[in-house]
Image (cartoon, rainbow, N blue to C red; front, side, top):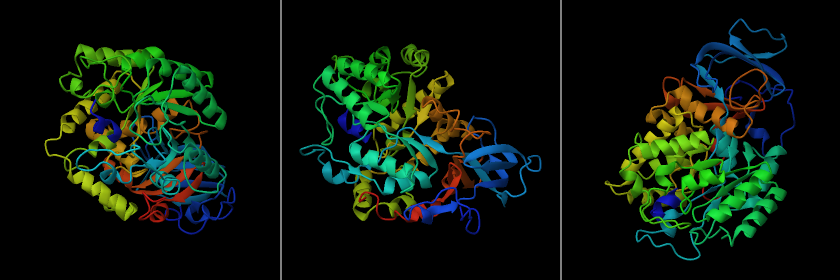
Length: 486
């Protein structure tokens, strides 16, 4: 697999200030809280419930004490007269997004670190932690739950999670992944290189004790280290995913892996003719160029994944950023970046050749994801805010939904990938991931109708987390010009 491909890899809503807060937010949180009433009703709202079902028009959604109490056509739902009521005509309510390949870091200076000559200097690629801007952007975009899917600054990640849970800073609920389980040689300056199975076991145990709840294997891990890591993660009731190369997908499935990242076109090397055991080969993606997604080899892989209940995480935005002329430049993205990060991204974008081989591989990856989902596979979604710097936290999660629709999913099914499917993988489907009575009020209020125009998913006005509403525009404005700095 080519190395450059792999590392690629309310009260604006509710007028006026709502009193009777459920809890007292800190000074860093309070400016963004727009809805804090203990009980309220959203009337005349369109509901896309996250199950893949068609949108329901003119609904009333009753929320009290952070929980969804009732849903039904306007006028049919009963609730106490003391509940605050708000007319949300023209708005759509979807479940809070569950980002399954999100990071609290970002490749902020990629064109400087790896210039036009492609040479990466010592000690390797360095990525920037975003403890301030990333949580705010995720929440602003509607991400109420996220998995970090690999950590480069684990103690910072732990502090972010604890601060959010203590209501000291705004952000989503976080399933924290431990530092990468990586072998030799790694491209990244911030990654440890495993020395063997005992080291893998030690690290899994250590980070479980520190509070990490997920694990991720990386490109150069060996089969022996991966097998031990999976077994040890499961002993802690945690799951392990992988962005692999040295170990093939079929080998990882046999070892008991829970999830595989990015899709196989960019990460599975099993079809490389001269593949050596435990070695990440050059040009691995070329082996997929000639494969037919409907042919026996790929269909057998899909059957193996589905029969072993192995999920696949789609990360289309990070690959779209390597297509010539894509994505369409958005002012909101450039406004959020620091000037240095924006310059780095625009330089990297300009270097993409018009005949980039990624174009055909991207289309093949899209075909695989559609086929995997139709076969009953659990497809997850996330943006992977890395690559050439064009994918940002939060905005990228919305883009993932849009790209799934472009791939052929219905808007309702694409939203399900980014909501209920993630909740199911995490075993939290009884609490989050869809809109139903008894579930946590993790919801996104959108101006417009993404069931007809999926781009409307970007028009977030209020994000509810446990029934507390956050002003999306204020959160985005608070990070203007700072992504890549803090």
